[in-house]
Length: 130
Image (cartoon, rainbow, N blue to C red):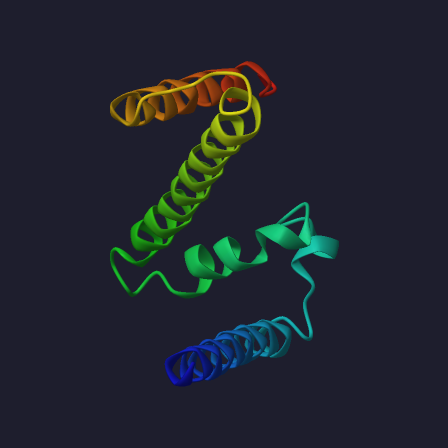
């Protein structure tokens, strides 16, 4: 139980550091755009576009920074989608298949992978096409 305690402490500290850095980044953007609001001037349409606008407008002297930013956003999105699909497949297996069917241990992996594929394809069917 001693290691559990330190794991919780380390996780809490890292979360605090993350949110602290996020707050500093937000404060830096507020200070940078204090006198000129890009939304009111029409440079951007929503406040969600402020960080990419800042990267492209104010930091062009760092070549490749915008590409690294886009790669980070895409990889975070794909990672989240992968976790959702895998957990949804596991929930379907344990909640829907296990109570009604007797499955051999050698088949579990194949069934969960097939359910993951089905969950992924069904999620694509629910996406808007705009």
